Image (cartoon, rainbow, N blue to C red; front, side, top):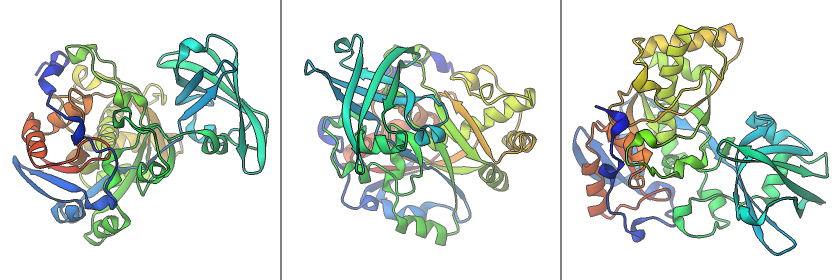
Length: 404
């Protein structure tokens, strides 16, 4: 298949606004579950998910945590400016960023930019019992937005504390509502740990401690990866063919024990969410790069958008994982840090993911292309069933288990 020349219009379907879930159900695991098994579609409830999974399988979750990425400033003129944090600029490391004190810089989107030509934005904030001034300076363009320096006049206060005090949760724009206090809990997975995302890995929102316990009791092996979801996840495909769409780059972090678990499970996994899919499938191409260049830097391990379609490595998934283990050994580290821009679309051959838990995605989106590739083109059967059977769509909607 000529993946690059896929017409995005072929991946459209009618999605009325009343089918988009504006809020989650009161109980996460009571959402509906669509089950696609080898072409046969049925429905159930999410808390029965463990019944469909093979004992002893490996299930991989994305443990990223959504940050309070929206900061509002009001100019003396009354104009409201929104600074939307996309990714760290200085320091670039996420962990260091949230511990930094006094000053940092982010790549940001800026709302109402025309009202912020020059000058410094200021607002007073309170962290604990400390009152201080937060300042923002726009210092130049960046690839996906603007570089903005943030300063606060208390060196005892970390940026994590500043953000918790002043930031707002960036719920998806298609919900067409303001974030509420309840979103701070409901728009995080129960296993979220590592701060960095501006959008939740929403397939994980259905899991409760009870469902996780059922998975453990069934002997399902659970592992976590980290992919920090960028605002680009909502970026519509505006070109007629997908070759004109530029994927956003996302930071990934995978522990050595996860790679070892993949090897023990014959490099086969159940992915929770499309973010876990992108991380797992990127690992294959990272291993292939390391076979070609064992001395590659983390930047050189970045997986380019079209790499799967342009390179066609002959390495097996098992060999790829072994290359990553060797790389970690050489660098005396237990963690792989790099980034991926991978686009998974019809014509892609999955290397690691065998089953997928995922929500229902927007029409003409790259996430719908990923699902279509996973189901060998049979996505319409799933979406027609969901539309005909009152399933709720998008981030706070219902879930599906896809077994090709």
